[in-house]
Length: 118
Image (cartoon, rainbow, N blue to C red; front, top):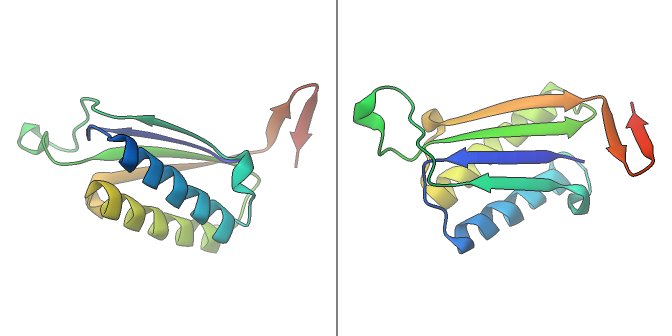
């Protein structure tokens, strides 16, 4: 049950958001071995976001938060991280040094009338 939120200074077109969502779903399935139907994503584009000083304010940049139910181990997250950097480079022209990804493992996740724990 991953939740992935993207905040970027790129003005996201509908097709870019769709490509990110589709690409992320493939990574969730292929690398994390999780069913993408349970994935939730949020995209916030055209945000005043800058890495470094003012001279870089027009450089495509993003901050991505990835919350996962349960762990996958270092190797799994390393592979996911590498693939996410490639996806964002291909779709939004964001270079690896301008993409920050935060990972968080969640040990409890709710569903109506239930709480899942690992």
